[in-house]
Image (tube, rainbow, N blue to C red; front, side, top):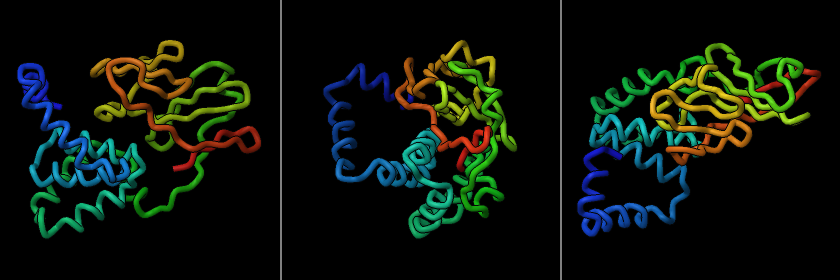
Length: 208
């Protein structure tokens, strides 16, 4: 939400409150994935850069795939037109989201070798990379949790220096996450994106 909307919500809550109540109620019968995907299209139609980035990340977090986002943009061609679709794709490319890379789009999801289980100590968090994708790995005895290293707020790639113990702090807007659970514990309300994982013969594998 923009600073201007935040201001108006505080200055005129009786007026703006109805607007936000309407938005919330209008999509109550839609699942979160569909609701956010529709919001992506509306932000492209209005060419709202910040809003488009926000709802694109929400849609991906709720389970939308990159191909579903692209299909939605193309299906909305009669309303959007080619120029607005190109505008949206330019922003997607600038965001450098791994799911939208051509090689990822043309390859089905598969298991990738992340690291040796012995390289992650019990109770500790380790950051690693696989072909440019940053990952945080937390180990609790024989159980592992793997998270995308990008902050769910604006996609900032979080470095090792952002980690203190099991607390991960985004340097851009100071969102804090508990890597043990993936939950956002300060500033925001969106968790880290968890990646499906399994252990095979001493190797930790991730699925994407």
